[in-house]
Image (cartoon, rainbow, N blue to C red; front, side, top):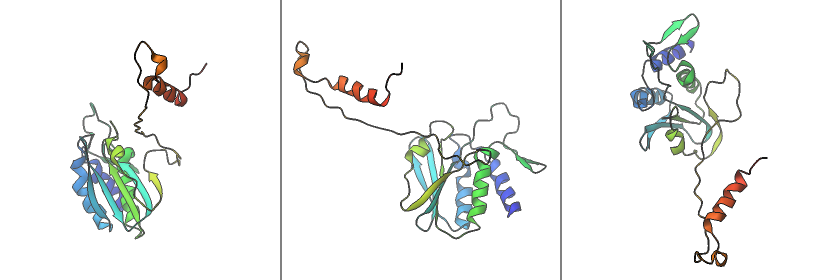
Length: 197
């Protein structure tokens, strides 16, 4: 399995999947996931391409990571990976194509239920993660990110919230006769972000 893992990592590192180009490896990954007994589908993400979602059975762990890599800027050969002793060197080897290769290896060594999400746009706006829906019946989630092999119990993310604040209209010359929705909204927000002295 070690040789296959290195093969997967080197193959994935050759795809120049900076944010917005993740589709370049989609077909390759879909085929590899299917070889591991996964049902694969794409989830369109508005303005950002598509996440790759894969499942085997119902429930099980939910494993999530991203497809895009940080831009290489002026690196002369960022997508020509190489072996340097026992290390794999290339753009995305650590974040997160190495983890995807390890995931493929793990999927080939079990037939248990599992859910996989490979999201787009993580290195920029996070639209792939925002569009993601938590699969039903899961037993927990693991996010594959570089942590120097340390277990991290939390992951940065975003939460969207829309609040409707009602008031009671009144004429501007008699504001005491009404209730300002704007003042109530500021009071509501202040409860979440109290001033510190």
